[in-house]
Image (tube, rainbow, N blue to C red; front, side):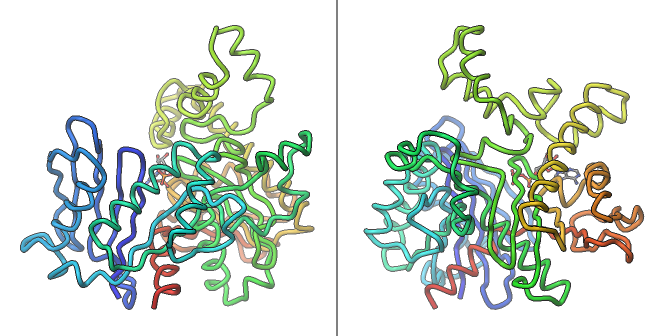
Length: 397
Ligand code: ADP
């Protein structure tokens, strides 16, 4: 079956067409600036050239139309007609407490996703628009929702409750949900597979370090804790997000800078993290470059980043009563040996040793700990689109 995977944002739409038999990406692309002047579509067939064109896309339905046109185009297309698309998998950010797994989309599911919009006002409405647009153009194709939060629904209450008046949980469902669940699930499963073991026998810590970043504790196959919370703002220092903060800072800064609470939170989401701390960039490659050029502040930020990840590894080791495997994934985790080395220092107390030579790996599966290391440390590239395609096939075939 050919599965179209859709990741829809408020003004963007990422897509991949995946052959579920071979798990090959047949084509992928991105629509940007939807509903804004200067809309662009970038399309790339497997083995072909990546091409970006400026084409007006007043709404997401128009974007989906263009995607289908590209996929079926005589020159850059990879399928003869729309009929070849067997199913569509949608990445949905927030499933609240309603979804502990992926589901086939129907009216009830749409309503439940709508109800979770309160918890993710920037993401869920955009995800719904993506579903709606695809349904308009492919009314008879089955569609599946795959939630970023679902994998973490196994967290026990002691891990997901905040120390707030309990009525806020009861009234508004204020609690830890966690995100990147598709990635934490995929990567922990794959790590066990590579080791030739059953995930049910392992305590795994997954460090997903991309633009957004989160750590999870996967105990005997289930997520028991994760660093992101009600929203993706909590936890690690990220590209532009602050991660953990004393909540009193929000009020303090609001008063000092004459801002509203939501304006301060906007700063915490978009102008903090590596970007805000360095004043250079949110991109880790720029941070590395600055370190090489002798920028002292960049070094401090790298150390703060590694320290925060190290603290979470310590915490989750305690939470699981030990750890067997620590896995690095996503853009930074897969590619940046320097930061893996820095984080490694915080694992030494566990009898964990990273092998400097093996740690040079970038973007591929590898064990990077020494043979005598008490904990196995690995690099496992994540693939959220493939995970979504697999879920879509599982539920529709
Ligand atoms: P997203 O959360 O947007 O999916 P990614 O997983 O692509 O993010 O990660 C983006 C981060 O990964 C950026 O900080 C980028 O600098 C870093 N990164 C990507 N490729 C490399 C590389 N080859 N070397 C070092 N860092 C990299």
